[in-house]
Length: 174
Image 1: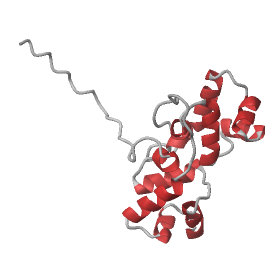
Image 2: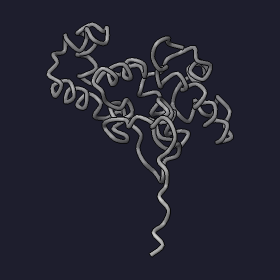
Image 3: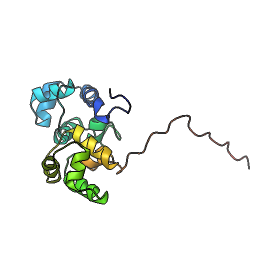
Image 4: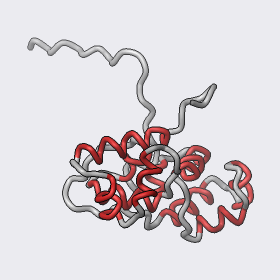
């Protein structure tokens, strides 16, 4: 829990992973094998002991037939409608595009997200990063972490409405 602001979206990743795995009727080891990761890695992610990279989340999502943005951040629908590749291809270009649109240098953005300029340059060059780092980058750039990591969904996450839904006007009797 983070005091004074909403919890990061990636906090629910372990629970979403477990729910999706159980809904598919899979055990941990077959899921890890299908995703191409070590069984210990899957176990540690599901128990919340390890923060996965966005690439690992994409592989797990593909193995479970769920959208990676939902698995990592709880954004979007759960299931993929039909066969669809779930990759992080283009994340570096999306990050660089948004950084330059915001008028930030690599060093300035790195300071804002508490990374070294070299680490940020590596991400912009295609290196993988953890779902937590990608979410922090997205928050600072005011964009959706699912869009940044996976190119999934809208560029900006719409804020949920608070309070009551608007009243429905009665049908016009004419």
